[in-house]
Length: 172
Image 1 (cartoon, rainbow, N blue to C red):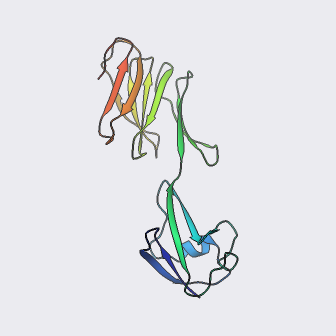
Image 2: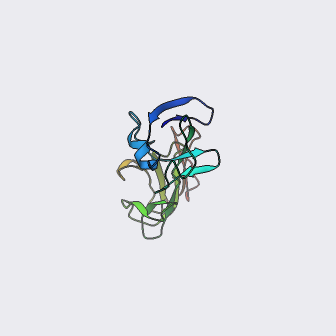
């Protein structure tokens, strides 16, 4: 049978000759150039039925000529700051700790994720803030200049700047 994958707005992404026994994995493996969106999860839906796990196209009612909607959603992550001098990035879906950030020498007061999700900013009692890569865990930049502990580090709305505030009454 031939099925089409369309966006939520109805734009066709691909048309595939599929077998009714195909699962989501089978279908995605036959989409040319489709590797999913990095840092996102994909849902394939036919009306109100979703193609998940071992569910087949036949089980959700897909027939020849069916239009399946492809929905790409963020894969939610949460960041935590700790008194043990570390920050961590966690998967909301699985509860798994994805990365640990451990270059600070004193406890952390805050952590924030950049608007695009690619970086993390931490603020520490050690008087520094750091910017980290959320894919590799690498420290990209150490921000210095405060004379006392840094209480907060936040990204600007466009993610190009980091604002820090410290116990010494300064903001940078």
